[in-house]
Length: 267
Ligand SMILES: [Zn+2]
Image 1 (cartoon, protein in one colour):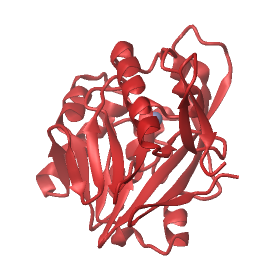
Image 2 (cartoon, helix red, strand yellow):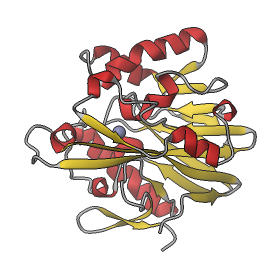
Image 3 (spheres, protein in one colour):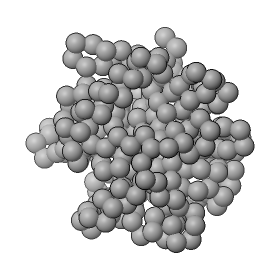
Image 4 (cartoon, protein in one colour):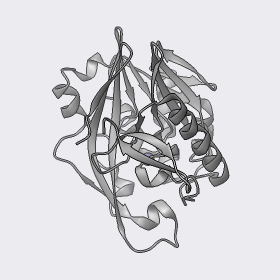
């Protein structure tokens, strides 16, 4: 069984769940997909760096938004807040929340409603721009008012490209799944771990050629996925898979003939 915590140099990294969702394959792979139900987890990452307590993405939030009822089903016995408490923390202890992008299954507790009273929420400006152009009823569009409000009230900060949010937590823009999609390198003392968010959200997505109906720019996604996973293998960095529904959400990636494979970390 995979562990749900690891040390990266002096940083402590934990994977906290926000339950799982069920949806039709068509919602993830496009109209032509088989009529199958797909399950995905929300493996939110918590990084302790000195006095900073950083969340990478923020699950679905307290409940499924109304516009998704019928398309998604949430299954949870425990949510992110329960898991945070089990790790010994309160919502008010969180100091930074990095949102990889504005899809509804990533921004929940950070935006709807904002549940971390002492945290700054980091969003790429390009992600906000993209959200403004989406149709009503799209999660990225639905997140725009909350982000704009957060910027106005001072608890949301817009990023323009790559940079270090706190010591050891470095964001890198790797678009494809969405515009301004950011991944996170967790780095300390020569060690590294990688949070891929929706660039490679589960083990099946380690195949760079898997073209998804939900990637805004599939070619960019393929190129970025290959580059980032190659770097993770070279650095021997564990990769944290946000939507992996099995216990193998913490994997070591290895190049294969078809692409990459993920092996449970520690095996
Ligand atoms: Zn997602």
